[in-house]
Amino acid sequence: MSASADAVARPATRSRLGHALRDALLMALVALALFGPLLGLKTVPVTAGLVLESRWHLVAAAAAIVFAGRFLLRYLVWRTDRPSGKAARPAAGVARGWLGKTLAPALLLTALAWPVLPTTDRYLLDIGILMLTYMMLAWGLNVVVGLAGLLDLGYVAFYAVGAYSYALLAQHFGWSFWICLPLAGILTAFAGILLGFPVLRLRGDYLAIVTLAFGEIIRLILLNWYEFTGGPNGISGIPRPSFFGLPFTGGEGGFAAAFGLEHSPLHRIVFLYYVVLGLALATLAFTVRLRRLPVGMAWEALREDEIACRSLGINTRNTKLTAFAIGAMFGGFAGSFFATRQGFISPESFVFMESALILAIVVLGGLGSQIGIAVAALVMIGGIELLRNLAWLKAVFGPDFDPSLYRMLLFGLAMVTIMVWKPRGLVSTRMPSIQLAQRKGIGADLVGQGRG
Image (tube, rainbow, N blue to C red; front, side, top):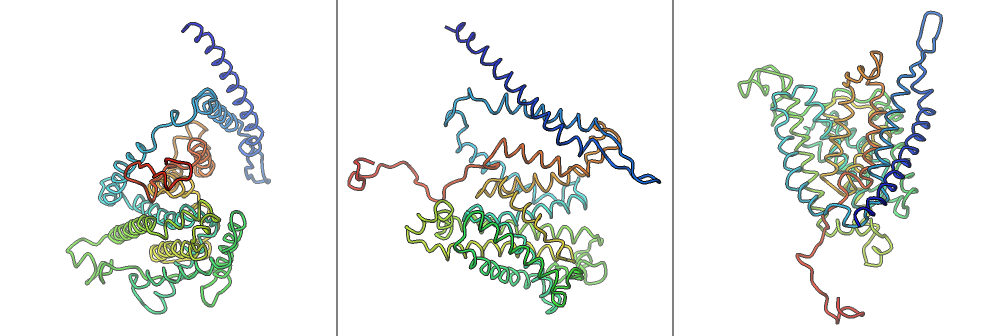
């Protein structure tokens, strides 16, 4: 019996290997056609004009990478002989338990200890602040996209409204960061409600187009309303936050003098890091709590089926408005921190690519998954910065290879790999908002077909 089974398995294996090789070869040829003019030819300026330089080794390397990746996917991942169903995948509860009990506390402890680690310098602190800012933005967008199921491509507009609200309030009224922060969040929530009213009857692609237009409208207003926003010049000299009234200066009455420390510019950076960490954790706790409240359950019902949501008596208008308002509020908080962190803002900081990046973090992390979004933010923001310093690639592609020119291409390939491997995001399973402690049968008097 075993010998006959082996005899059947060997031809099947050879057939799968042949299909994988043919498919990988076809994709390599496609890569040659696409990458040939992009990577193989380069214009070099000379005295008389431009000279066309060939770099066919880069094209060959790209085709080899595509061939190897496609072969591994076809031969090992996309297998037709693999059993389907629950037996072919690990238990979701085990994955959720490991993420909740191991990964989340590890990330939290690392975030708390990040500024005091011996290897952390100014550059790594800035990267940490950037990652936490985008994490906060992604958690805010997750309310709209992941929980309520409303595709928002103009989330950067709320980011911009929060930043400009903080900058204008702090400059014209002289209020502190802790006063302007909630006011900027409230003003941004009103902007979310203004966006929500025109899109109450829209869904899917139509909703995405309108939100995209809203983001561009806000950017154009900031660019052209010169008297109010400064136009393309932006707003500079935005006040910095202080530590309970102690400025981070080197003179008398500063933070260092009050605590008997030697003045260092890192004091302000560390303080800003813990401020954005606190804001991000508050955003996480608030959104997790909201999901368990009736409004969060209404968001999830709206995401699954709007018609069924209406039939249950849920007011879809108010549900959509609350999702837009609360998601916009967190975007406004992140924008306020961005303004005080940079000290200067301009419309160029709030382009569509920012919305695309935030949405990519939400989708890659898993719609509705908090821990997945945190991991995706670390991978995407930290990965982009890591790709700036891949000097070892010069040993592979030659001394003239500049990794900074190809970091977005390499990162795009990494994103495609993740979406092929985990099409529903890094964390595709989530704990339900309501669940029974144990399985219970429903009485026959409550079920028309008999025993439940």
